[in-house]
Length: 177
Image (tube, rainbow, N blue to C red; front, side, top):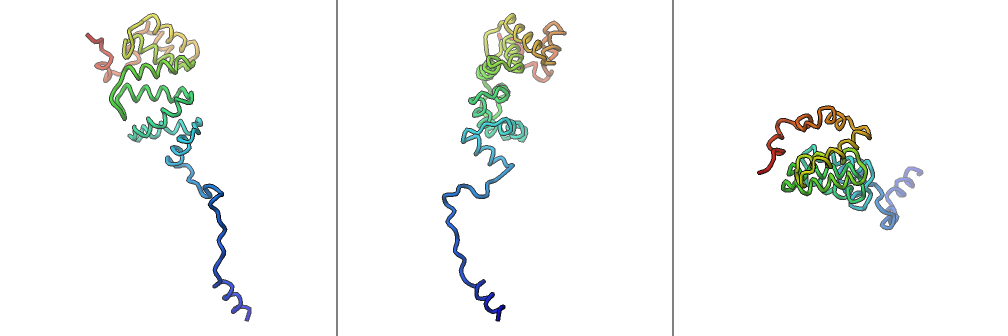
């Protein structure tokens, strides 16, 4: 008898609770979709912004640009240097040395040693900006003073740009006629 009552109860329809006003009850976690959704909502945390590294290394440069640009707009200087790298190499958009140098300048102006070093190189090479060797060296010196090893290495060579330029990129940094 108890068994029959239990079976009858189990056969009754279950009244579902309305959960429409409760938000996302089972959100994605640890996915690129989740990161991009969070960034689109303005949640540009260090972790979300750092995910752009993995996105660009996987070859999804358009998606990386979207993430890095939002993070850069919110002041993340590491995202500014990544935007520079994408623009300088034409990844996810046409190569644009001027735009790359502008991202480096923004990171340098925000006090980021990598931005200072990169913008110093831009100025010393005249890539994307007018050549200004003295201003470029001053930025490299500031980055070195702040502890950036590659800036110290460049200083140690008397600012020989070949020290920090891969041979494969020599064509890119050759003086323009």
